[in-house]
Image (cartoon, rainbow, N blue to C red):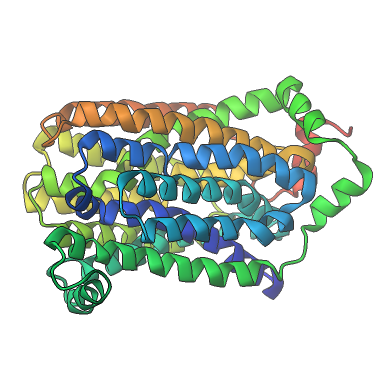
Length: 441
């Protein structure tokens, strides 16, 4: 990998840190916000549905994808994180549920806008034998974000080793006579502050990036409008089949992952009976496993058949949920085993290959737009699923076994469809893949 591609990959990969970080920052403090604002499970469902985990990101993705194809990948990097910082600021200052919900929505929209441009830019800027590895670096950032955020959440949580300064800060702002819940929620506010700082750093770095050479070359010979590209995406037979394939494998996997991303600490607390601090610690451990697994895979993904890693990740996920069905997560041993298996799954996840194939299987003229469309479908339906899940799961986790059966079914769909439609793109230039799939014109 050249120094230039590594530098740009690291800068753009910060978007994945901010994406997953925003989801998990809400998850790590969801019980604190619930206590502070008196939220019901339905309120939590709406926060999940409109956040970076679902509908917010869905709205942003379909906008950002086609904007990136029309105005360039750098255009997105120049302005989008300003929107992200606005959303995070709204959450930090939230005093009621509507303000908190708006902050989650704005942050989610920004995440959605950035994702198609990020994966597209990484793929277009990579050498042919490093494209998978660069996507894995991006995936590692997706793991490092939650790992850091959950670590902050654990240290800053009520009873955590760093809670005293948070408590002092809260009293200095809202007074010494403030209620306990109002003081404790400041630990979540500070966690979101760390995201604001990282977003500012990422914005400064991404503004300095050069435009993708492939995008520049495409625009020099193709003057299609956004409308033309949308029409072509929906009428080209190869493109339609590709969207259907990628959306299916990513949706079925993400319906499981989106629930885990937002509700994992909450599940540990209600079904497993753990404290908020212990729940965040276990979730943090899971993300450490994600980073380590992805790091190892990054050395081999461009050399070994993708099929092996795809099966490996989904087998770990299926085993985790089958264990839940068999023994539940009511014991420490069961919780730890589930945490390890789910971490391995995320490290060799469907998302790695969705990001890789999504940026390979479409021509440059609507590459980001196609990814935005699929992201819109996946995160939008994940929003609906997040609301349905709250009913299945129940207020105290009484429906967790039924939810586990649903998870197993969804993961099996992702495995079977993925194996049936898996493309052979390893070691090929993007231009070669485009010619093979769409012809010379």
